[in-house]
Image 1 (cartoon, rainbow over the protein chains, first blue to last red):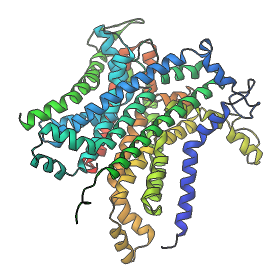
Image 2 (cartoon, rainbow over the protein chains, first blue to last red):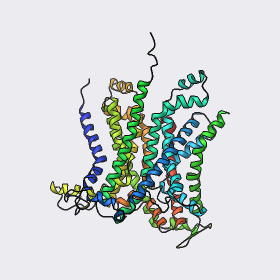
Image 3 (cartoon, chains in turn purple, orange):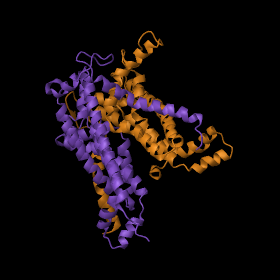
Image 4 (cartoon, each protein chain N blue to C red):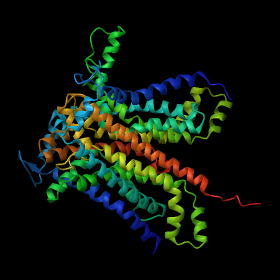
Length: 278
Length: 282
């Protein structure tokens, strides 16, 4: 193997610093969330305790954390399911040429780059002017989809651009109907990527702030609740909450990666194609 | 069923969601931007007062200038960092397994909460924070630095922290597609490392750089929460102008500002899109 040049070591250090920059702050607040009961928002640590985590479980201390967590979780699941289904359908549509395809594509891109506050403001205005209930599961749900669907669609583009069409042709040649081809050939092949779409759908919804701000109604989602806390909570309880939801996010990401890994392992083992040759 | 019809049925759900929650809201904002407002309510009208007020106020120009300033500085920093990281992953890391693992390490924060990531800078940058106490203990400074938190510095730091990822991913994607034989050819032709970078790698990464640029500039220009939080409400950009009007229930004036912001962002994207075809890059 070629010897490593000086650039490798310089860039490795650069990369390590970048990773430290990405994760350092969150590690800091994770440590600080174990502050003693008298501890403040910054170092030094004033003893070590679980005091601030206990505080989180006392309802009256910090508002409706658990209610907002349940809402965010439910909303995340709703957004995830709809994002996967709608993105797959959209991806399938874009494989054929259809009139309006370019327009729809630009709408999806616009949805991605439009300042979030415009969605929030516009959807909020429509719902209030029409007298519809502004609620996280109605207006909030729709607003979040404008953020997750474009990601889903772009992933589906990437998937289908690399998709080998001869699999489908083979299925059709064997007499499979369009539905059978999709259900038994296409879907299993793209399944790991769909987990990716699901991961985007859930996590982007779970952490979404700007688009939900004016569209969640009177019941806050978790990010809204946390943001509310930043203005009136001055104790490490906010770090404890931040640590817990980040741990939850990491856990979610871990579950998705595990699922992808299990799926690809099964696929490797599953087929005996080519082994029967003598 | 014809292919055309099937495609339409498959595309319909996405089209409907985007019509209801993207197109309709924009139309609504444009309409409301001509409405009038009292202290407590808004009423339909067709007047240009909101725009007149917006363009007549010197604050508007300062705030727009600030918005562009944040976008430009963040763009330069995220591009420099993002390009270097992508370069390291593509050309210096040799096994695909490590490339994927390190790439994921960079992308995981994207799936966590932006607000928490902002909050987590506070114990770091505050007057008694880690940065100040470390610098004092090293003897670099005698007094804590005040400009670390609640300043332009902290705003831009947070932007870079949150959005560098949007540069790394598309640039990495472009770089991974570069045919290695091109680089060998450049070296065989006698090009130095820097020459290869300038004349081979950078031109081939241009689409990725452009996509990253579009993401970063639009995210920064449309932001209101990072600026509010990281500046302790001491700095303003257009997004904050809008959100302030909203909190005062001045929806028509918020809408007018939103329309101007949207037009500005669209002009910026239009200029950038002339330089790259996104669909080819996926």
